[in-house]
Length: 118
Image 1 (cartoon, rainbow, N blue to C red):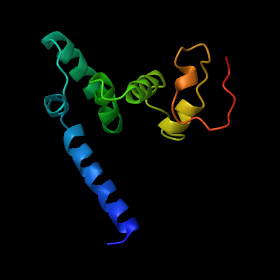
Image 2: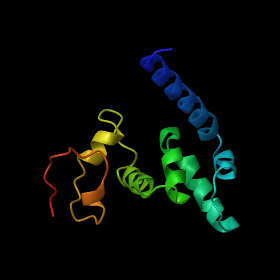
Image 3: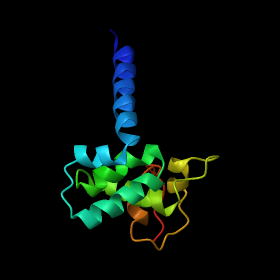
């Protein structure tokens, strides 16, 4: 198996795992390392059920403390309303129009050499 076939196989495996968990928010919480009260878990389940399937893993990774980057990315996704279907989430986050947000300089998907507005 060459490198490109291995990469495709890894992506497909990751997609199927994410898809299986993403369809059931309760299963996602059960599989996570999240240790919260029942009230907080109910709020998290409510948020998970309202967001697109593609954003759920990032949200839970941020909530579980697995990654600060995931936490920032999840916040940005929620802030932009999960993106316009025409332009997509990544572009909507990259083109954020709120430079007064404290996470603005840290938002994902920025171009490497783009100046950061204060």
